[in-house]
Structure formats: structure tokens, C-alpha cells
Amino acid sequence: MLGVSFDSVADQKKFAEAEGFPYPLLSDPDKTMGAAYDACRQEGEKYFEAGIPRRISYLINPDGKIAKAYDVENEKLDLASHAAAILADIRAGS
Image 1 (cartoon, helix red, strand yellow):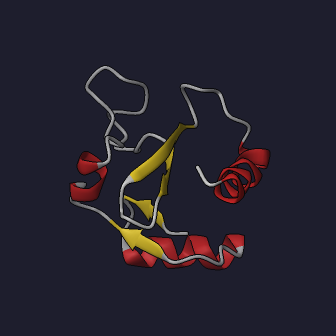
Image 2: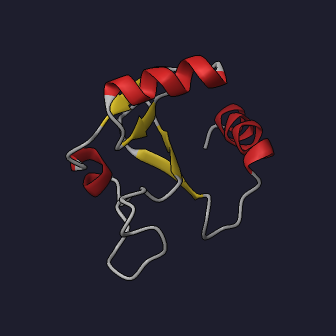
Image 3: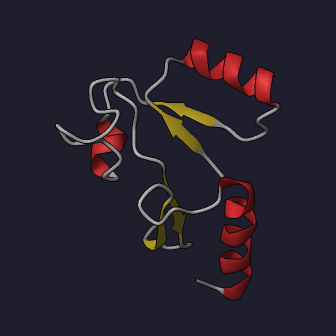
């Protein structure tokens, strides 16, 4: 499990400490990884001006390929059960 955001390392550290986030976080302020994984919002899209990335989760298989993508906003996924759904897909071998 790896979290990625456009925030600075210092901001991520504050977030992780405040929320008890137990997983590593990758700081992507230049949005290189965000662009590669289609997490950057397009002009005119909600939150584009604020520079907030799209909420997307990816399940990466052992070969490094995307096995499944979860577009949290567009699929209107429930954040409270999202992690459990990903774990179920991992167990099912997605």
C-alpha cells in the first residue's frame, strides 16, 4: 500500500501523524506520477484550480501492471468500505 499526493513531504507527515495513516506516502508536487496514472484533473473539472488530484486507487499485480482501477469519485465509491473492497479483490486474485 502506497499513498500518493501532490502535497509536500512536510504536509504528508502532518497528515499521517494526525490521521494515524500507517502506510508510506509519496510526495508528487510536480505531478509526474499523477500524470502517468491519470490522477491530474483537467481544466474545467471540479477542484482543478485548487490543484487537488482525482481520488483513484490502483491494484498493481506482481508484474507491475494495473490489475484494477478504482475511480472513487466517478464510481461514487464509499470511502469507508473502499479499503475492504480492494482487500477482497486482492484475495480474489484480481
